[in-house]
Amino acid sequence: MSKLWGGRFTKETNKLVEEYTASIAYDQRLAFEDIEGSLAHVQMLGECGILPKEDAEKIKEGLEKIAEKIKNGEVEFSVDNEDIHMNIEKMLIDEIGPVGGKLHTGRSRNDQVATDMHLYVRKTTKEMISLITHVQEALLVQAKVNTETMMPGYTHLQRAQPVLFAHHLLAYFWMLERDKERFADSLKRTDWLPLGAGALAGTTFPIDRERTRELLGFGRIYPNSLDAVSDRDFVLEFLANASILMAHISRLSEEMVIWSSQEFQFIELDDSFCTGSSIMPQKKNPDVPELLRGKTGRVFGHLLGLLTVLKGLPLAYNKDMQEDKEGIFDTADTLEGALKLLALMIETMKVNKEKMFKAVSNDYSNATDIADYLAKKGLPFREAHAVIGQIVLYAIQNDKFLLDLTLDEYKRFSPLFEKDIFEVLKPEHVVKARNSTGGTGHEQVAAQLVMAEKQLENGF
Figure 1 (cartoon, helix red, strand yellow):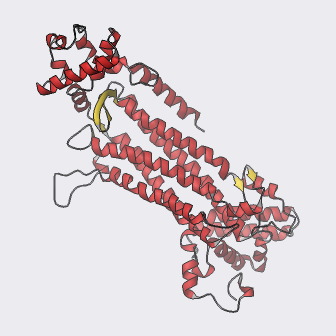
Figure 2: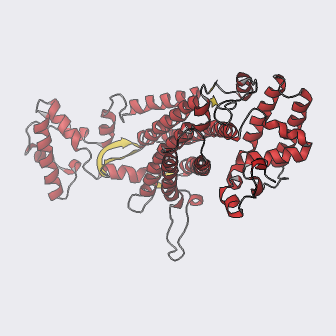
Figure 3: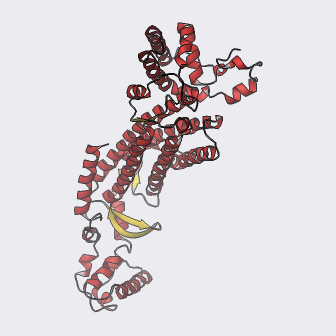
C-alpha cells in the first residue's frame, strides 16, 4: 500500500474519504513545529542508543534540509500523505532513503501532533502578549497628551459625570493588562510536553522524556500518557483568553465608531483606516473598528466549536480532535490583525478636545456634585438627591443648564446654597474633586500613568 500506515489494509482509501479527512491544507503551517519536535526526538533516540548515532545524524541533516526547502517555498504538500506529519516523513524518506523511516521510532502521530500544538500555542501566546503590549503603548501615548482633556463619562450611554479622556483610555489599558496576565498564566498549562506518550500508553523503547523536554524547553512532561495525547485544555484556554480579549477590542471599537460619528465628533480616525461610500460621496466610514467588532463573533465561535468537539470524547485520541486546528489558526490570525490595526488607529486618531469640553459644559453631568455639596453642609444625601432632581427638572423645563441658574434660583430649592456652588459646578472642579484612589482626578490619573509605565517596563 502507498500509505505509510497501509500494511494492514487490502484496499486503497476512498478518494472522497482521503480528501475529506486530510488536514494538510491547514496543518502545513505546523511544519516548523513538527520539524522542531522531530529534531529533538531523534537526538534523544541517538543519545539513548535506540538509533545508531550515524542514523540519528543523517535524519537530523535531512530534516534541516527539508526545513530549508519549506522556508524557500520549494516543497509541495500532498493530500495523499494526509497531514503535515506524514508529508514531512515522506519527504525525509525521499531525501535520505529508508533510514528516514526510523524517525518515528518510539512515538505516534498522537503524541507528535499534540507536541506540535503545544509548540505552536506556546509561540503564539508569546506573540499575542507582545502585540497587546503595543496597543497598551499606543493608549499610554494618547493618555499622556490628554491629561487635561475632559469628556462626558457615560452609564447606559447617558451622560453621567465628567472624566478625563486619559482616564477613559487607561480603563482599556488595564483591561488589556488583564488579558496579558491571562495569556501569560496560560503558558503554565501550555508548557507541558506530551512527546513520548506514544499512541496512548507509552512505548516499549527506553526513551528519555526528560531529555526531550530539555531539548524543546518545556517546563514539565505529562505524567499520564492518556492525558498527554487527549488534552486540548491549553487550546481551549487560548481560545477563551482570545475571546475575552476580542470582547475588549470590540468595546473599544464600538466607542471609536460612536466617538467618530457626526453626532459626537469626539475623535477623527485617520483617513487610512476608513472607507467611503459607493453612492454617498460625503461619507467617511469607520470600517476598521466596525470589522474588529464584527470579527469578535468568529473568535467566540471557535471557542464554542472546540468545546463542543471535546465535550463527548472518550480517552484517548479521536479523529474529532483534528478540528482543534483551523479554529486556533483563524483566531491567531484574527487577533494578530486586530491588535496591529488597533494600535495604529489609536496612535493616529485626532482628539477633538473642544467638542469634548463643550459636551461636558452643556449637560447635567455635574448634578451629583450639587448633591455632594449639600451633603457636606449637613443635608442627608437622600434628601439632597431629591433636591437636585427637582433642580435638574426645573433647569430642563426652563431650557437651562446648571451653571446657567442664578443663586436666587438655587435658593428656591435650599437655603444652604451659597456663591461657591458655581465654582463647584465647573467641569474642571468636578473632575479635580474626584481624587479618591482610582478616580478621574488629575492626581489620580497622573499616578495611574506612572503605574502603567512601570507595568510595561516590568513586562512578563
